[in-house]
Amino acid sequence: MALGFEESLRIGVRSILGHKLRSFLTMLGMIFGVAAVVSMVSIAEGARREAAEQVQLLGTNNIRVHRRELSAAAREEAEQKGSRGLVVDDAELLEASLGNLRGVAPVRFVDAAVLRDGREAGARVVATNAAYSSVTDFRPVDGRFLSALDLAGSKRVAVIGSTVREELFGSGNPVGQRVRIGGHWFTVVGLMEPKALRDGRASVIKVRDINRDVYVPITTAALRLPDETGEPGIEQIAVRVDAAEQVPSTARSIERLLQRFHQGVEDFELVVPAELLAQAQSTQRVFNIVMGSIAAISLLVGGIGIMNVMLTTVTERTREVGIRRAIGATRRTILLQFLIETVLVSTTGGCLGIVVGSLMAKGIHLFAGWETVVSPTGMGVAFVISVAVGVIFGLVPARRAALMEPVQALRSE
Image (cartoon, rainbow, N blue to C red):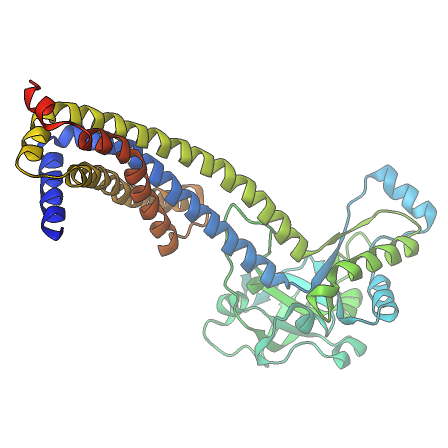
């Protein structure tokens, strides 16, 4: 049996090499189909990883309350109802009213330049409180973060991100040094850990580059870096709960509480990273179904093309089949011979498709800016599919060849 298999394999390779152009054209359907599978899986895996990293950065057990921008008419109506928009008092209300919160941090973005020795950093000043570090799970690697004493005394202290450190201090230690924020000098008391961020177009959540943040006490910012408009509002409130399972119920409680406090004015919105991830995964499933359907059609067309060519090949080699049967080859041997030949064509096309699909994924990453990940699992699935297509669409031609009667096959011209 081993000799029969080796002989059938040798005959199949010789037949493919003897008709190179026809064999390549037969493989094209498989190449395109498998390439579509590999590129689709790589895009899906890249989007999944990027979404997971972004959500992990915000925290799966976190809730963000964002200020909603209102039109002039809506703002006037809100003021008449007594709503001041999102303010620090909202954060204090949440912390006092909800018992399962591990931390609440108001956040205000300050429009002020950050300088040292005439050099300006491309930084963003973030006014917040001492809980921000634990709420966001973003901690200093040198020095410390803001403290309750800093906020109580409205001290001029700052904690800087890793990119700001590089731009202002190079590789030197910034802790204990001073930087100028707006028109005031601040002492650097901490350096935050560097965070790796992806900048893909398939982003689920637009996350700012926190390595460029400079953190100052929100009380200090209110006194020394006031908003030019004079409004007391903040941009967001970061909330952390005890466990991810409590996020949905806590989000509903926060929404009801703020709606009452804001007199029913919808000047805020809740962002739940875990829910965004679920929505992204749902959208990704639809994308996978569409791309999978396209790939399946390509594979079907490729399989039909292989079957048609193999049927023609069987007709052309009728006398060869008759001679082999006459000298002792069994129907099983003939079936195996043509089936091996079909599988060789499909798997060769599949391997070429894996290469093309990997190059397509790399091209999508370079030119479209999408994160793609070519995984061994995806390539293995594509290879198995190519083998399966060869077996399924090769059975009909192989069976036709195996069922030929030797005498009739020898009479064929």
